[in-house]
Image 1 (cartoon, rainbow, N blue to C red):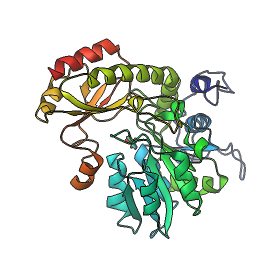
Image 2 (cartoon, helix red, strand yellow; image 1 turned 120 degrees about the horizontal axis):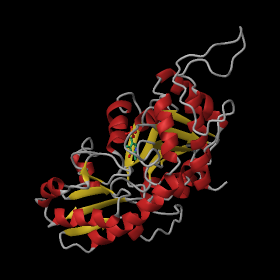
Image 3 (tube, rainbow, N blue to C red; image 1 turned 90 degrees about the vertical axis):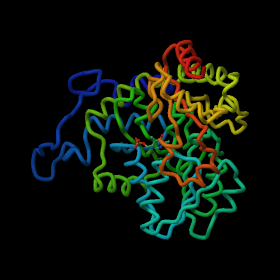
Length: 372
Ligand SMILES: *Cc1c(COP(=O)(O)O)cnc(C)c1O
């Protein structure tokens, strides 16, 4: 089946018992056993829940993995993933990445003895130079956040597999509709499903997807033991959002291009970062999202723009149907130390847009007014 069909129909196109064509919300904590040693396969919803399982199977199909695990948030998924490693293990991480992931690794796992190197992974030679005896994994975001740099997934997989390590790709920005990292040798895909996958700014969720039976048990044990599992209702919201993923991504793509072109030509804008403007010779993605970062010439204009936007909402997050504008310096990337932030390009002149699916003329009119 093609991916747009999988989005709509998921793993279970109807409920086998009632025929319901929307997956039922099993708002149930515990499940009865018919007798000792006999089970329906369900026991307690922290470990397994039918609505969550339907979503996990759908996500696994979309990312072409063997299995997917759903968590309460993206951070819950990343936290569970890192438990596959041990103190003294070294992990190379994209330097230009989601601030919350930086905070989790640097403020928590460094304290427990994990070692990290923050590297511009779009440069394979820099990654090569950062490899150490104890390097066990590479963790990347591509395109990166917020500078939209592309990292070659296949090159990263080859580098780390040569030394018996593992590659994880946070695929939140492109979604499986545009990019499938497992096809390029990644061992794990991570998602904040709170963004494009759910798509409506009404739910938080996170995923780990993998293709190796070896990781299924340890990941499930962590999911069950830490308990950051996705609720039945949020599982259903995500399943509902996924039905329109394909058409939403197409619209995010066409709107994103229109707005990026408008900004590129605007006299108050110095530079636009948009993957659709880069020559992407790696050819690992099939399209572009609605994410655009841009430098304003005069930093004094930033506050004015954020106050003047009306249709575009000044709010954190991305990937929903509503257009949002973010100031990475204080919002998404506030946790990153100044030196590293500036080296990554996150300055007081940088704004980030998550272009929604409204009429592009209305979005442009709002930006035009705000930039005046
Ligand atoms: C938002 C985000 C996360 C964290 O996900 P939550 O669902 O907010 O916990 C991780 N990675 C990326 C790229 C994100 O945008």
